[in-house]
Image (cartoon, rainbow over all chains, first blue to last red; front, side):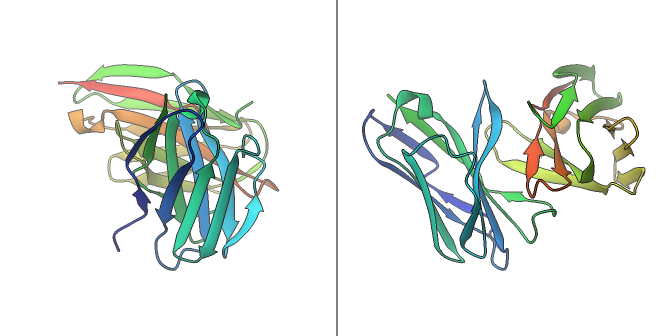
Length: 113
Length: 111
């Protein structure tokens, strides 16, 4: 298996633009997680899905953020409109169970100017 | 505040020495995990220790768990330059239904 795949790896956009981050989890993993990592706040869980259903979105910063998982092999995290404070590295991870080890993708480094 | 907090925040040692990092947490857990993150990369799972286990080994890694003190330690023996990375503990708190990561320890191995 190729592991968790994320795209794009880098994204530079202007404030106000829409940003869409994509993730393909490891096949067979029932859980998918979106994290955000910054120097100031560390690694934060934004939202996670179980069998394509959002379970906990309490970490989503505000209404500008939304996430979907239309099928078992694809998820998106969308920010609209983007703001400079959204600049961070966004990770997607997947796992077999909520308590098992998580497999992280390489991350998307987002810069909003 | 974070469920898991690592100590120290940064550690710099000579190659060949042992490195010890600690993690403290606040509530009862189902398990505790350690991850490594190389610069510019995603986190990589190292080891998982369950609440009923006290010690676990994997190669040069040794993890201990003391549930009475709500703490864990990660020992890397005979460190190598390639061990330079940030190390995070993550706790699966009972009832939380998610992993919560600490802020990490930045380990530097000097050749």
